[in-house]
Image 1 (cartoon, one colour):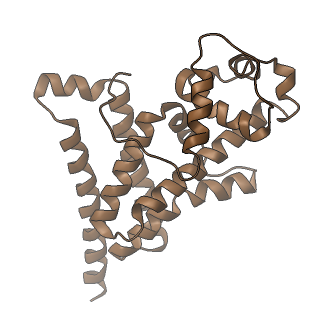
Image 2 (cartoon, one colour):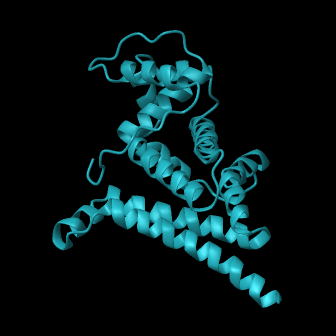
Length: 232
């Protein structure tokens, strides 16, 4: 893919072997009879399908073909395409939540922010389809479980922001700014814009990324220090 550099692979706890097996199955050039289907196996296959084909290409029939079966067989385990896509989004949110919590464990302030930013960047490049599913996720809606899961994805970031002294609305806004900056940067990389800038201007995307994250972190610290000064 354009804009995808040699980023370290992000391993999600407890799912690496299962994911490799699903991916190996989908890499075959000819569809073959699928193993016994289950809802979990279908969701895992959909995640791999997303990274290879993209969000818009995910349909019941397309996924069934990749699994070596027919669409109606999948309906024994998922209610509809909307049900499958919702479940995939919930799974992606959970995976990102686990990943951020893992890399941020025992870290604070700039160290934690850099670790989370780097992990998300790596995840997005290795799993572009899943990232697309994640970034299509609304912050609200009429699905309480889905809304709660969406908000939970911000918890590791907000927890780290607390080490800068931010809380409440300040922490929530800072978390949104953090996600917006990371997503925007990764999107520019994946569409090749950052590669073009690097060729023309000698820009190192890794250096620009690190500088951007540290500027965000410095802004968080400054905002807290200014607020404290204003109180006095």
